[in-house]
Image (tube, rainbow, N blue to C red; front, side):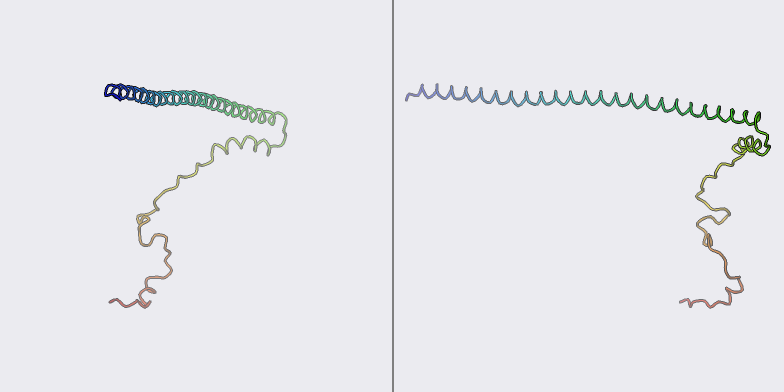
Length: 150
């Protein structure tokens, strides 16, 4: 073989290798673009689904609030109707007082006290005698044997 033929063969081999490497790089880069498009599409779908869930949740809570206020209003109307009917139809004074007294009792109920994280008095929870009952008088304590101190 001739030296010029080897140069041509080497040039053709390098050209074919370059085409192969270029096609491989294009395929790898194009695959990342396609994968990114799929991820973007899934992200858009999930955002749309999330917005639909949020809208449905807002509608649900608005309807629940309306129904709760309707129930409260109907309960008040029922109570008023019951009181008016009792005034007109019932002869028993105890029953009338009980029906009319139920509203007054509901207003007079004391609210529960909030729990505190401190004790009454000046000693507080860190005092040595907090929660301890005195069983002996001071005279009895003086006569009681004491452990030896070193």
